[in-house]
Image (tube, rainbow, N blue to C red):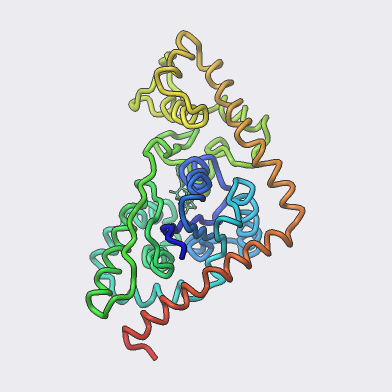
Length: 329
Ligand code: AQP
């Protein structure tokens, strides 16, 4: 019997995947593949909490699958599937909804952040997002959920509703633990280093996308916000330079002291060239693989179908148990 711990991770097809998604999430997923029983889900149902063009959403969903595989998600080691292919996700979310108190849900800070960003589309789904996320996780009897600090609150809610359900109706859900990822992997916007790099941000120089051409990467890094203080040192109070240095730190795998030595008495120009170069070198193999895979759509569909076939029985079994325990015919 496979005793590996089950890990669930999700990513929304809400736009072009960027360096923040890669360094903060996908790279870790790839690195952890051998250690765990991995479930990777393209959470397209979460994506519609923000208005999407339907045709583009389909395209972005399939494109994201292709990029994830190009990044190194290996279908022999991991299950990759599309959330909307399994109706047990929204079905379980409803059962969980009926077991989450309004007070607990209204405390979720992501809802407040996203409502501020989309004041014209504050919909019930956006409010309810954490219940769907809890269902995503609980359906698969997951041990661990890799999360950045912004998602910790949602995992806490997931644990609480699972414990409450088990207590009130009988043992049904495994209680997942957060797998806290390194703080340094939080990448900020290049144009505004006080906000996190985000797929849905509109600034032209906000994010490095994984499919950006080298000249685009060079230009975006050149324009990245720094400050008038020219020495290149890790100082959290200098958000722009700090963000760029953190990206360099992760990609170069050098320690902070040696990076500061490397750029001592050199201007931003030298540092930014080195940073652009290391980003280009990191993304080149991913882009090459993406172009290859993009010519073989049948292969991508096969991977998604195999992932779906492999995880569906787990979702079905958990949902049926929850339904029975709560008294739904
Ligand atoms: N800037 C970031 N730095 C580090 N990690 C990040 N993640 C997102 N942005 C950064 C991590 O990427 C994973 C997938 O994210 P998601 O698609 O589920 O949604 P998100 O966190 O809301 O990502 P975006 O890019 O900001 O998308 P939009 O603009 O649609 O909201 C998650 O593990 C996330 O922590």
